[in-house]
Amino acid sequence: MNFENMLPYAFALIIALPIIFLLRQFVFTYINLKNKELKLLAVKANGDLKMQAYERMTLFLERIKPSNLVNKFDKDLAIHEFIYLLEKNITEEFEYNSSQQLYISRNSWENVVASKNNVIQLMRKTYESLSNTASLQDFKTIFLMNYVNGEDFIANTIEDLRRDAILLS
Image 1 (cartoon, helix red, strand yellow):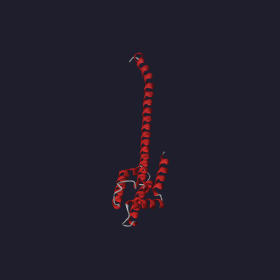
Image 2 (cartoon, helix red, strand yellow):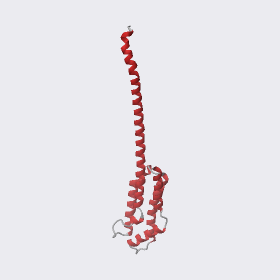
Image 3 (spheres, helix red, strand yellow):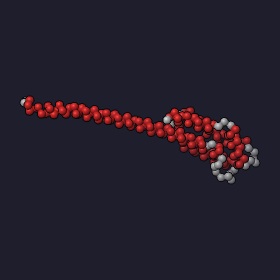
Image 4 (cartoon, helix red, strand yellow):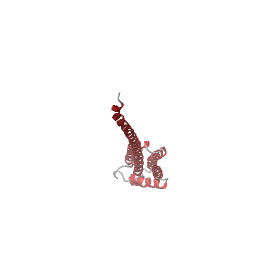
């Protein structure tokens, strides 16, 4: 074998090897950066889902505030019909939002459940305390007064949700 005939091939190999090595390093670095970018996007998307969960639960709590509940439905309903429709509405909305418990803290979820149950319990206690001659307007007024005179558990829960959401961002 003649070494002079192999010289151009050896020269091409000496030039090509560093280029191939640098190209390999570039591709490896590019792939690593893209993987990191995808991970950051996944974390950001998860954070957005968590923030949306806090927003939805806050909206749910706003909707079940007694001051907002008394304005729902027709004024010509009997008290027991009004309470039934309110409970049904609260329960349906709660069930619709129940998947949000995956994204909010356990303590916040327990506070939301307790607030929902407290509103329903307050409606029932108010109904039980009324006389048979009470009107729907009487029920609404006493229901609101009972809520105002008691602990504002909905505002407390919203404040807890706000604190948790701030920690998220």
